[in-house]
Amino acid sequence: MARFYDRVQMTTATTGTGTMTLGSASSAYQSFAAAGVPNATTVTYLIKDGTAWEIGTGVYTSSGTTLSRTLRSSSTGSLLNLSGAATVAIVCAANELDNLVATTLNVSGATTLGDRLTLTKATANENVFASTGYSLTGSNASAMIDLAGTWNTSGTPTAIKLNITDTGSNALSLLMDLGSGGGSYSSAFALRKDGALTIAGGFTAANAIFGNGVAIQLTSSGSRISWGGDTEIGRLAPQNIRFGAPASAAPAAQTVSVGESSRSGTDTNTGGASGTIQSGNGTGTGALSSLLLQSPVAVAGGSGAQTQTTGLAIKNGVAVLTSYTVANLPAASTVQGGMAYVSDANATTRLATVAGGGANKVVVFSDGASWLIL
Image (tube, rainbow, N blue to C red; front, side, top):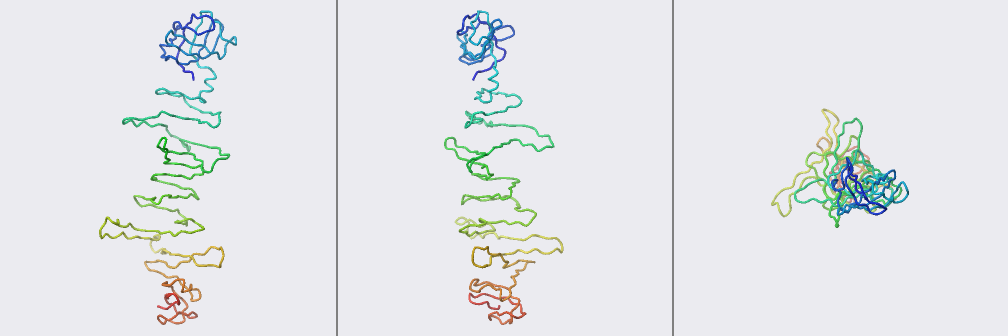
């Protein structure tokens, strides 16, 4: 790509169509050397010889101060046959301005690019923007990309926006992939086109918002979600928090642990911390909330979903058993060791098998064969 320099124009006494030997700088202009043009640099030139003109590219040679000639256009359609009284200037041709953003921009030192830079890529299957050579040494901490601006608007601005028209791509295509490692690249942060986010390290956020249907998946056995203060998970409406997949062909057991444990093999005779699960607080004499423990009950055979029923409620600091009629008690063999509250016992004899049809309210216990009155 040709290089550009300010106010460079020189005379040439060369005749013919060959390489020019440069003379002196024209009035109010500077020479190639004064402008700092390095040896072997390619520039775009404009030759004026009377009313004739020629635009082309040439390679500057500082020794002998010459400039070769490769034609782009001219008033005659060919290389001018110079008279010996021409001038040659460094210029920027129209096609170079048109193609500037479609070529590799070689920047040396601090460079400012205009008011707004728009990149239009005409060639498919190539990078729109690529940078190489960024390197920090010593204690230098310069950012590879450093953007700064000011917002003073009633609108809703977007600092960085990426809009991909996806007419057909792999489902795992990434909108962003940040990582390190050079030739042994390792992704640290990847954003998939469907919004799935993969973070290799920890995730810290003061206010994280996740959309409807978003899944947070911890793929490592050592993964954890932790926080340093009181944390709220929820919304101002009835919602579920689930551990485990909503549905699975091979459901796996899940465990919820509350309270920290002491360190096995390190702490001696140290107890673990108590865990508390509580329902919501009301105010004053408002209705008391309950903490409910539920489990499924069987339905008719087939693929229909089982339904949940409350087995135990904690209310006003008291454990409240679910009320059953004798006819509705589950089979004693399925809940050995279980307890229930019966509202229609016909007797209250302790350790007798409960029978229905009465008005007695008793607590019963399953020994695996029968429901016995306590």
